[in-house]
Picture 1 (cartoon, rainbow, N blue to C red):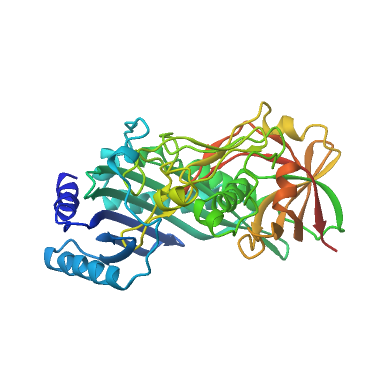
Picture 2 (cartoon, rainbow, N blue to C red; picture 1 turned 90 degrees about the vertical axis):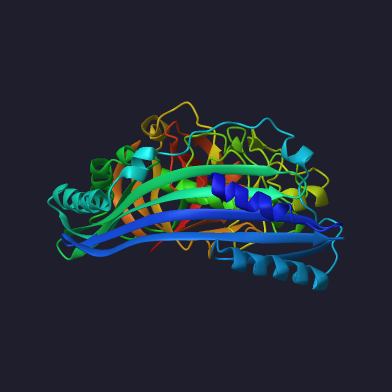
Length: 449
């Protein structure tokens, strides 16, 4: 870590008079194991490192990157960034974050590194993936096979420094497994997935992932296409997490300043039901996207986006924060091969007071959506149109009933937010930037037969 931070600090100190210079570096070691039918299908152990260099001269921004930590190639990237700045269009909002802006929020200390994972052997990871596949096959006699079983992890170090004196470094580990079971009955086959994620190898639970995959595949056996109608819809936690990812993008400062969001100009308005409180909190160590600082070295903080249904703010980096006259709130995201964007890293709804089972109690008829397809193509963050394929189970008199498939659920994002009737208590941090929990929407259109 000291070497990575030292590298970017040395680069930042090479700023010429009148020049703002920022260097962002990362180093990641990843393992990916896929197994099939009791054999290793693929095994990849790879390292990736690089440096991005950003130069700003009188509002002209230049950027270049190097996919290596070799000094000569980094020197060439710095020269390219300076050259690119010469030909860039001036923009009064371009500029690096100052040290005062970076420290405008109290920094948090988070332990996001697992030395246990760093010491875990590749053989142990392969054995884990094979165990996961075997456990899934044995979980239910109706499971005919496993379509996909994998283990993956990443050990990442990050550092950023600028000529304004900003210096920040961090390290984190992540690990996870995914399995897709294939259940069969008569001529029908259904699939269902299970997963487990954590920071340490010992955090993973292959038995739970296998059981979830078996349950989610077998309970769809016999699924048919139901008649079209309007009815309440219950989102599975995995579906909710995907939907929060879409909302997070619509609440980014980039989408707002470009006018490409349903939330443009609505700050201070009621945009959701009173039971909806949405926040992005990368200071929560339980979130897999947790971090002590953003990609510009700004101290992380909790950003309340929607509070009791009222839109409170957006996710800003330095550029969008200055352009919006609000300042950065530590939401810059990037890789070494890109300039900073802005977005959510740990977005979640505040849990309600009832469990998923209690939440469904009293529902005479509803659709439980277990999975969706075409979420990104079927969702328009500008118009708010929402129409996706879905499969799941009918809910009758508060309990799961017959399985359904080949249906489309439709509404609009603004309408869905306003129609959220209740949020469950089952918050779970999932791989990526969002948490999942059960959500009840009072009414949507289900298009089927």
